[in-house]
Length: 548
Image 1 (cartoon, rainbow, N blue to C red):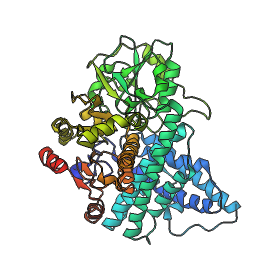
Image 2 (tube, rainbow, N blue to C red):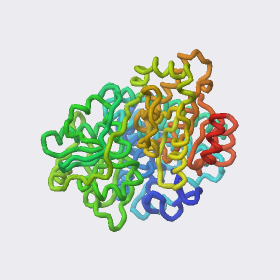
Image 3 (cartoon, helix red, strand yellow):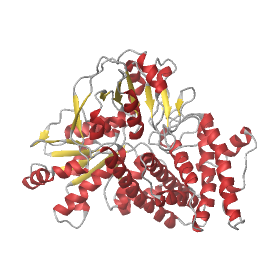
Image 4 (cartoon, one colour):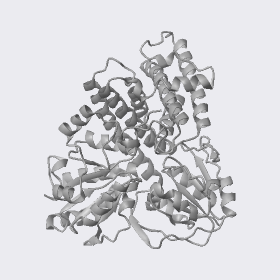
């Protein structure tokens, strides 16, 4: 295996024996094989689209397939085998449709179209040949990886929007175009760089679509105090990102005596008005995703993973028999709740019955945390914010969005937040906030010094806020605002957020805890020279730079 798609990749270079995330070699290779086959399917689908025909089944398959391969989403070998077998059927269906339309020529520049697995052994052998390292040129490999990982981020957000009935065929078409581009030996580094920036433009588009889906369905997030203590009822802990899954679960647990708590990136669900009507929506339990191996021990009830951020349990974990997966998530031996049928809901009866037999959660902390500062809520406070900036009460905003992770070096972000002057405000989204959202940082004239917009995809809100401030202050360039970007990344959804910011012209972003291993020196140089991308150093050095 070779995988370097996440920030914690081994030695900052690549995982070659087993993923730091816990992904075994056979699963890593099958993921590579699935990506390879989806490139071939995309090749055919692009051809079909040029003839004026769309296949929604293919769009869903490729979106789901990309999402399944995101870091910490799915570790289930059998699920990938089934997905690969389905890939051959999908591919034949598209080929047959092209034949019916009089097109019988198989494109010669995509070998994945001509390969077929007869056995599992054939799959495993082919998988070893089609991974990242099959591209020899370091810079081309780097750009292909960046384009692929950006597409995975697109797929994640597109799937969440589709689950709420919001879709944009252009987004699906670009994901397929991007996959095909990674097979084209004739594309230069400059052309691939252009596609990477184009990926950023679709990052903006998909985050806007998901924002519309979420707010149209559940209302605009509003300032909310979220309980981080516990009640005395049995409960279910829901993790991941998918709000439609939470909706189904809340509807089905109502009146059962079972409470529902959010975990990690599901915390921002509390900010949406539509979910406040559920009296059994009890609060948030625990912190960022990587602490689950200790926090799940004390929850006592079942845990539902709706998407990525699943950490393989330790061999002696007491909660292994309480985990369920659904959607893109998966792990061998964990019950998987199947997708909803069109127009229906998922069936969570199994996990609800399990919860009824469990003890109430053990309290691990008390108090409340405040969030709900997405763009609509901040616009409602715009006059107050603008006055604070004009008066000097707010000197600078710091965008500290992104991901958290296990590395000790990430303590940097807690220390950075603690050392920020009291006339600065943190704008955040994603699980990076758990490094500082429980610190007593106070407020500025009633404006909290940590403004949490929501999940990682809600980084879009931070951009909308910045663009609005640019308009209010009559500036020509978003980079003239008193905003600094000190962003933590971990996986591929953070990649698409970064590409979206670059597309919007945001410069001088500092990225940590380390720069991506998949950036070759030459590609990193392009980002530095054109966009001012930089890594982090020490808290004091970076503080001096940002505030100088």
